[in-house]
Length: 446
Image (tube, rainbow, N blue to C red; front, side, top):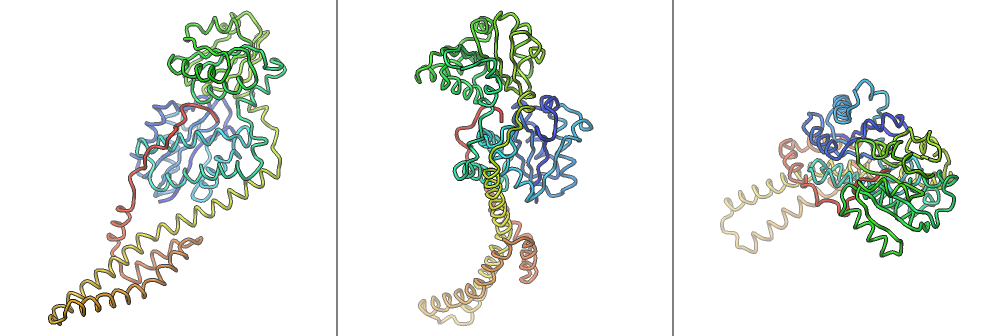
């Protein structure tokens, strides 16, 4: 089996296509289940953010895998395959590992170096674990990605340029908002991105925050947290959103809605100048609001156009070096792991041979006392262990090197191992998906 990723992102597709291809939570779950039902795939994890939709899978056939994953992405995103295909990219084996680790470090984000993608990778893995679509390979890969992302942020200066999309978006609105201190803000939504927006606005010193959400309990909880931290905050229902807009200076919207949450008429009816930041995918705010007098709108499309500022080249180089090192380490570990079932099967066969010979010896020398029998047993086992130790240790080392996959085949051929015995070990060593990753991030955008 081999690692394959098929996807599209802000680097390969226009925002209009990403917006249409965005996956709902239910669509993502169905995509994973259908991927496992497809013949080429044995594992699957979907990474879905406002800037990317990627399907990772462990497949047994490259071309069939690409065709199947592309078709499934088209089916579940609602964008026709012919239209979607020009925007898809494909990464295989080490290139797929390199891609995910780069994503985890923020190198492939709209705002290079941002750290929110780590929460989304954690969420993607949690969903795969919850649905039992993430097996050994993808669990190992995504856990490694989380570790590498944290390492990049702790060992390099990538954070200096790695603003969150919220901070970046508010910076683009600065000419319209001026200083945020003393302003009145409305946050629409109460998921992870909305919570980050509210926290960012609170730190900037806004005078009052209003949280509007379809699920009142989440809005109340977020408002209570902000109040405890010293910010005047209140929660309102979506039916009172119009009244909140009429008393606001800044609006940040990021919901999971599949339709518009704020129309141009809604913003016009507010009757006051508004700075509006739309971080949702699909978009929450009617793009016609760009043409409204008194309304400054920044959305994913305009942020993508404004995100050309690059972080310090030295920091990017340092992160890329970390990624290259970790890709090599992951590949070596996976190649070494693939030979383990063969080594285990070899040692099991040797143990069976020893047991058979000792049983035959008991039949030929029935008068051996317990001490003699124990000494002979220990000696035979020690001889076999010593004979197998060097070749099994060395073959694991060799298997970890590029091109080392053939050593497992050589070992099976040299010792005439039963392929079914090796396969049985592999099945026995494949764990059930581990417990769901804690602190799953609800919603959110890269």
